[in-house]
Image (cartoon, rainbow, N blue to C red; front, side, top):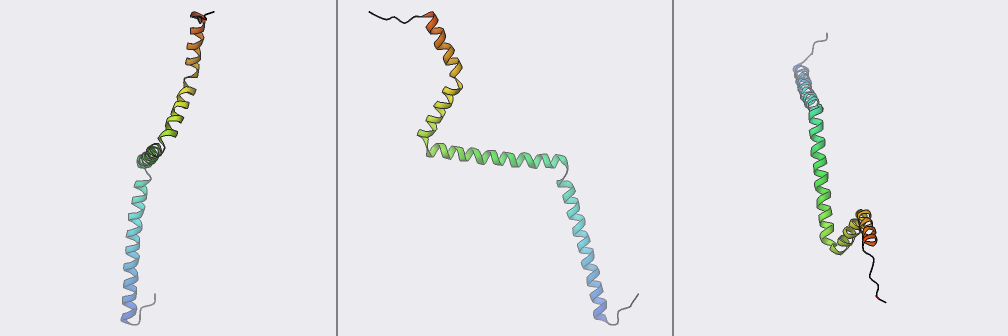
Length: 106
């Protein structure tokens, strides 16, 4: 082992050793934090929080769109309702035609 020749070298080596120890401590803390973050329960919680945030953002965006375009929103809602209810409405009309013939005055 080569011994330093002057005090500057000694202080330089001491500083280097201190920096190494600090880097090692930081690495240990970062590793522990990463292990904690990567636990399945923490990953699930983080995913839930992110999903909830996205849903909230989408809901806010949808509400703003509805407020900005109420006529279009009403038209789309009515159309969607008619499409969803087409079979029950068709059955109701078919039953009405079979049970109550239209009265046509001559």
